[in-house]
Length: 346
Image (cartoon, rainbow, N blue to C red; front, side):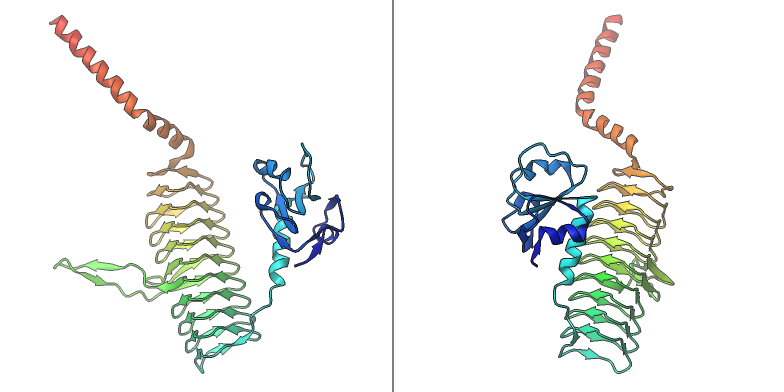
């Protein structure tokens, strides 16, 4: 990558404050900026670094008020974060694309392979599988029998997609993901041993879904586990059998959702959240990190804690909880005074 400030300004529709011929060849965080790098400032919390950074060019918002001397060339844009994201997208497009079918790998004769695909070495494509156009499957990945992967989806190394699953268009699936493993279904027998319930459903992942590393999405017992369009998963998430995640919902790492729970659209679920099974979570719900949710939630609710409560109630409860040691001492003192008064009266 090699851009001048003028090229960056033209691409982002920004206004230059400084040298239009300033050149950058790399990107950096503003607090770690070096000569020849491009950075951005969107969060006012990082303003102090604008006056100390060694970055050559910094993107800032048009309405940002400068309160000190700056060294870099500045480019004022409508939204610095969005502009920087657009530049990163441009940067990634410049990286040479993988193409072709590497050897050794196994592609069953009955599989259908689209145009301009990349299939990395030591990958396996099972019978009846359908691989769409421009799909990239990196080395050591497994695509089971009759699984379909639609156009422009990227499957990174070491992903395992079991039989009969469906992956939509323009999805990104990171390394270590397992899609379509058996749901956790067992029936306890009279002798206390557990009999496995066959898991005969599948997993459906709609378009534009991104799944972080080491996520597991279990197949349905019957029917489908469904991840709707635009969902974004962080790393290390467990999705149980017959779960449904609504459009554009975001889930942060180490969250777990038990079987048959339905999550609505546009929800935000924090890290290490646990959702019990068979719940219904409404649209636009926000669940704070480490919350334990055991009851269904209505549209637009914001909850926190374990057990999860409406956020203002939980904050009040937390304040009381922190005060419990002192309250315990006061209660003990009051009980002592009460005993002494009773003894005097008697």
